[in-house]
Amino acid sequence: MALFETIVNSINDFLWTYILVIMLIGIGIYFTVRMKFMQIVLLKEIFRSIFEKAPKIKGSQDISSMQAFFIGAATRIGTGNMAGVAIAITVGGPGAIFWMWFAAVLGGASAFVESTLAQIYKVRTSDGFKGGPGYYIQKQFGLKWPSRIFAFSVILSFGLIFNAVQTNTITNAFRYSFGISPIGMGVFVTILTALIIFGGVKRIARFTQIIVPIMSSFYIILALYVIVTNIADVPAALTSIMKSAFGLEQMVGGGIGAAIMNGVKRGLFSNEAGMGSAPNAAAAAHVSHPVKQGFVQLLGVFFDTLVVCSCTAFIIMLSTVETAGDLSGIEITQAAMAQHFGSWASIFLAFAIFTFAFSSIVGGYYYGEANIGFIHNTVSALFVYRITVLMMIMFGALANLQIVWTLADLSMAIMAIVNLVAIAILGKFAFAALNDYMGQRKVGKNPVFYASTIPGLKGIEWWGAEKQAIKSTNEGVENQ
Image: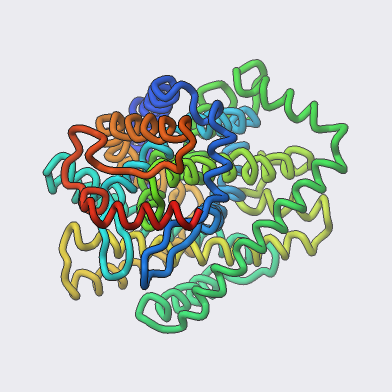
């Protein structure tokens, strides 16, 4: 086991140190400059896109842009926002928070590009729209093997390893608050997941979709209370973040390298910008122009990191909990909450983490299932996948914190690298779509999209079916 951990750590460190961080920041800067800082300059337009009504397709149950935003927020908010932020501060010092913010601003541009591309290349099925990196890679490049690599990385990341992270966080939270053994909690979560993925107890999945936004809102309110009641200490906390971010003071695991690395890592795990996961959900929305969903996903990244992750950071930093002590991960956030509000807050957070993490387990499973078809679309392959998911959930309950998060970082790196290469090449189509959108806005139109307006697009199905596109977009104009 020690040799395995050493090998995984070495590969992980190499990918993050020499490849992924450079790619994330470099591509984020390229997109930001190429689109003239649109994630900042167009904030008013971005917010407006959320409140627009979704075009309607007869006989289909569509969601609005605002619903898409809240659904996306509910799936993003979870262990990365609470346990991940605590780990970032522990390993990289307070400066990791600054680099988390920095990565989110740049990541907003990447999220816009990948989600706009997902919309452009989406396909219509009997179950609604589907799309994502696997689709835009295969359709534009005409190659199956990159799509299969990405599909495999999604299955590995979301279906298997990320679900182990979710269970690990649940078991640590309940052990800290209630003394429940990891084995018992692991068995419970595994059985509950099995009931859902093998076709039963769908009410549980519906329950999490309702309760997650409620828990998220309550958590943000608690964090705002902590900030307001400790407002005198906020400037000192901000000063500590900035000093640590640029290596001006030595913190735990200190130095600018550790701060950047852990800030970017934990930020990506939380907001998923550039990773290629959010586009799978973004493609499902029905809008009159792909850019509208790109805006929605961009704002989702900002909300996740600049709002929710910041809430966790200030809850911890405005407490006296020792991040270099015996506590780790979610336990640090629970201890800080208990210090601010009493023991009930730690218990609340345990239940909040359960709902966040369990809904993420269900969502992660379906992300993986949706990509099985790119590799081996058979009943036996799906059965093997389901059993492996359950095994990984139990593994997460029993494994130590470090190895689980290291495996998550490794799988996330593979997935992100494939997607980042693809969107770096295909980004020009998202830029053209943005220009088309803004051009229509400037003359007072509600933007509608036709594939023929962008030369070079290949494999377009929905936007390429002109009669279908005209009908849907005209209906969208009438409904707005």
